Length: 255
Image: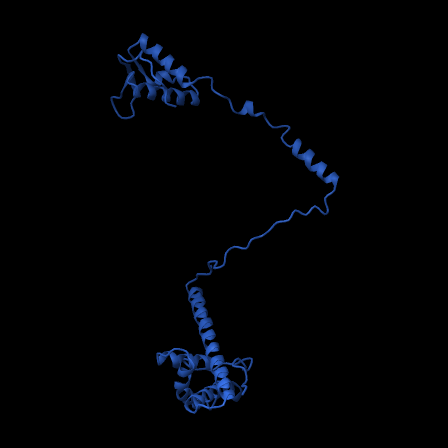
């Protein structure tokens, strides 16, 4: 026994009720209200309720109501097959085909209905971006040299070779300071041998930014090895350095 497809209906098909939009909505609602699983047995149990609802659709367009009748015919067939089981193998196979087909279609419909409700909720909330579920596609790039000649390659080579011809050499852009931390420590020691105290501002007067950094690191090494002491009277005031008894002691730089 072959019944028409569950999806056959008119192009502008719509049932105007407060709860249901179509036969699948009705059937799904009846099963969920009865708290039943979507199986052939649950379809048979809600058949009577489904038929009672169809009786209220007598004033609707017959073409539109026909979609309800397709499902009703399947439900009646499933219920009659369960109540009056046949001993013939063909009847069992037909019952299984109709019941499984309707169950699978109803499960698939519920899946798409839930997705539609989720999309509608995001639309109402203004959430119009959706995360990627699948992994990003792997795009394999191929170098197409079909329309490239030897002369094109020569032009590319010449353009690449002479592109930086007029740029300033790196040796003129970046200069390397001749002052090292080791040499600066020697200089600071010589200054403190002649005077007991010196200010940080005096040590960096007229120095470049790189020399200021080297002087600062040199002072930190001297303080760490107790060769000098640092003093500051007030916050943000100039830092003064005084020599100690270990000024002339040799130490290794940990740089």
